[in-house]
Length: 298
Length: 318
Image (tube, rainbow over the protein chains, first blue to last red):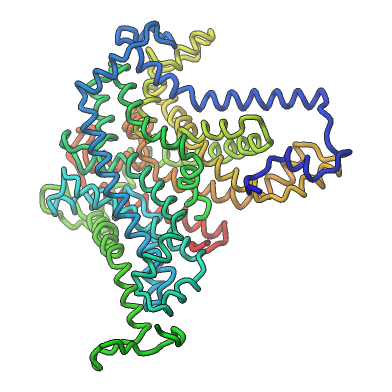
């Protein structure tokens, strides 16, 4: 049996005796129809801006301000323009590089420290944990100025390394917090058994706990991936060099120069979200879990 | 292979006697080793910058000259600054509006979707979709949608014969903040819906069964079962909204940079523009901007304190 949540209809059908089951009356049909209408309108308002964006990106530049919803002639010239003139491959590559390194380091360190906070006893454990935790509510706005100065001092402005270091620092506490909670749900007997077998602490972590922690790792990977890929303000502040800049601030910078070329702008926006939307549709369940776990459990 | 328990014992495997280290100590050493990188990153990129921010907030400093200690003068000046209070007011309006809208609407949508429909998964997938799109893309996209001359919103209004409702949405002081609030709702609806959805799954279906037998209608069931049972989730959603509202920055910065003429200025954009001079108006002031940051921090702390009070839980909730 799957543990998928049942809808009230299904539950009613399984639990309620047949006599109690509602007949499909006229009023019932009306309310079903209303429900479908509302759902349709809701979904439409959710997707309409994105559909409009894609349709605009397929228009010829001359048609930008025609007010037509559908392009009169579908053309990929805007995409051609974006790839040839806007250097978007470079921005994509910068973002991929920054995101992959950040996610790899955060996931490894958060898993390692989350495990230590959950399953290894050492003096000061609770205190250190609480100090790390207390920064979860720190607004990024408070850190942006001193971080900028910090990176300037280290000569790391306009470098990927500087941005990656700042991302790791900002991302670690929350991911560590989630991993610690996850490890606490795993039976501690496994750790004890490993110790009795004479495995090293790192061996226990790597060989016994890590394979079991996969769902937790998936969660923080998606969370951290989305956070880094979509991050704007650190990237815009710490990197000004157009060659080094990742995707989000580059998109923002395009508006200044191409504010009237809507097909090119929408094509760039479409390219920027396409990889993530594809992965989202394929791994929807993990995505939703990854992005909401912190909120639900926190 | 050790056969004894893992309680304190000496580890004699080939160690010199004066180097003898007890098992718990050896383990603690690994504990410290495992958390060391995380703690180092924390100190370098959170703790140290944080204290530095507090320090800078008490200086007068343009960023390139020598910082001059001026005590609490930045805060005193702030209290007399007109734009600070506009930013404060707008942040409060944004926070209040998003907290109300982004709690009630996602709750209703979650309840509606949960009622069992064909294609339920598709609705949820699409409603959550805006949440995975960056706020830069969201903001830039809606800038075009709101465009006064060629945007699809005004075009639609014209097509529907509602020409009187046409606006320069992001250029008029009266419409700019509501317009941004709508974007925030669009972007986050799916996120909060999922949280409510999780809450709905934990309501025992028997409650509805009993109510049905007692002749309760849908509205009564919603008011007397769903809403009270969802209350813990609702407070969580409200708190996330309150703290998010205090910190709001990206969406406003991308759409209007606080304009027109500060009509959508919030504390986040005020801080950023003061520090990095995005509009080019006046020389950047790191000290004053850091002081604004401290105010945001204090407000966020008050929000968190309310969270702990209202939900009655410790921070460590697992």
